[in-house]
Image 1 (cartoon, one colour):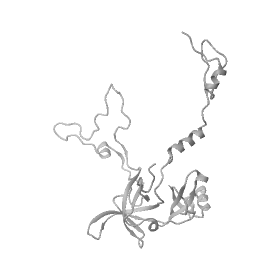
Image 2 (image 1 turned 180 degrees about the vertical axis):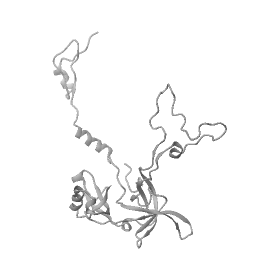
Image 3 (image 1 turned 90 degrees about the vertical axis):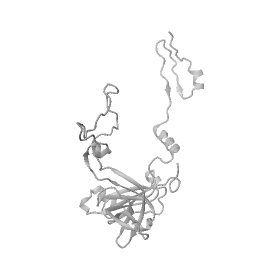
Image 4 (image 1 turned 30 degrees about the vertical axis):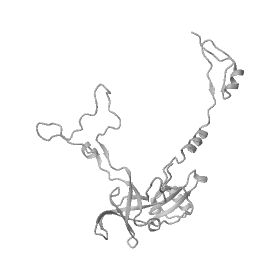
Length: 276
């Protein structure tokens, strides 16, 4: 059996300019081919040009708020609507405006809930003092298509950004339930409690023995439940009360009373955000 080796670089370099060939031939091994590859930065730039938007982008600027509780709201027609009452503490102040030139993307950073100076670290205090802002506990970004009109230490008011009847997306941390079984965590059915059954709330079989001889990833089993970030989309603003400084949003929102919420315009593809 003969092994092919390339030994004429003059004729091959004209056909393959990016490939370097060795002039020495061997009867046992062929020389390795050294192919010129683009740099990592060029590859990433080319990928961004192909995909366009590579990160999550908001449909518009939003605010942070505090969940207060739930109640029933009576519409003028007499219909009862379950709503969540949302309040606002001191905050919703622009702490930083990020642009394509300075940070590589356009976003507005907002701070919420005033705290005492000693509750923050020196780097956090320095970041807020640079914007001329008061000490704030929570900082979140809203990535936008355009950041014109925003400036540091600008206060955002909910009633100026939203109106009654608008559709919003609300994000927050759900109530933690701790370690729970399959029935509560995944709505499994329990076994018979009588007729000699010995399987009541047990999980049951989790896979075959010999084949595949393991448990598939993602198997629904007991474990930690709740305490995770979630987003509830397309909720309607029922009432905005300027006197009490509260907002009523239809439906349930994540977390317990006192939980931090993030309210932003609902993302509707083709309406307020591009399809691509």
